[in-house]
Image 1 (cartoon, helix red, strand yellow):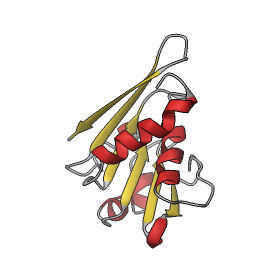
Image 2 (cartoon, one colour):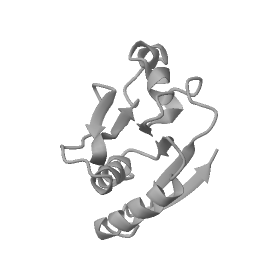
Image 3 (tube, helix red, strand yellow):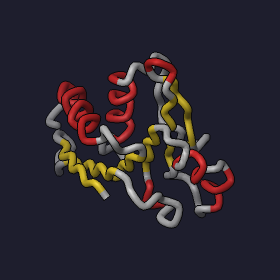
Image 4 (cartoon, helix red, strand yellow):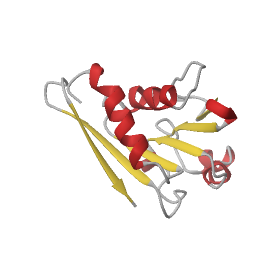
Length: 136
């Protein structure tokens, strides 16, 4: 992704890769574009409400087209996995709904066995992004 104009195409590629995946993890440094990409994914899935990072709430729930629910997590600010347990993160992950998880490295022991890992990396000038997708 060399510019914001490339985000819709990147989201389309990701949605195609995530066709069967219900859990999608987003790794990348602060400012790499995780939330921007998630906003576009939600837009393409028909979410009409404002999509924002749940940095303090830990999870946001969005309604997509046809009433499908999407859960958006941001674990950047947690200090221990217990905080994710307290909001019922494993139950969300097992719900069968699409779960989009920023900063999953903060909850390594709570992650499900299978997921799609999206890694975003900005270049040295913070002008272009590289997206890598791995099925785990």
